[in-house]
Length: 188
Image (cartoon, rainbow, N blue to C red; front, side, top):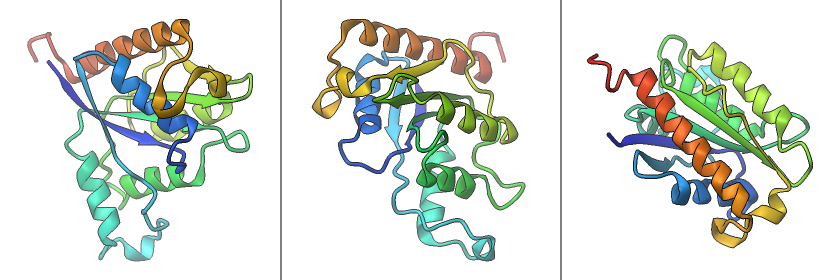
């Protein structure tokens, strides 16, 4: 079974490392996951005053997430946390209260950084929100891609064979996780 996966990229840079990584994941992801990037750059900041009559980009974003079987977050680290556009996307998708498009969707987080820690702080800051949103999040393998400036070429070409193998195993584990969470193969 192929699962439709909404991919949220935390960086707005056109050819930034997170965008490159998201592209690389489509290459190594296998045939069990169909990755579909959902843009977040045009989302107005979340403001509860607009819950009754949401801006059109909010509605479009929510409708793009709703049919997805799961969500994959690909993010850099900004100041030991996630970038503001990604936090805004999480807030827009989770509101109004009680109408979250994220509830129950399996999730995975890959963080990256040109530094040595691979976006560890962003990865865990995002997981805190996902736990509250009732998104069962893949625990192992953890994915912190350090030195991404040396691992990802233009357009997402992987420059390091061992990183490609790791990302392929991560995506296989995510596919298994989505199967388990969605009840595939257990007669449900």
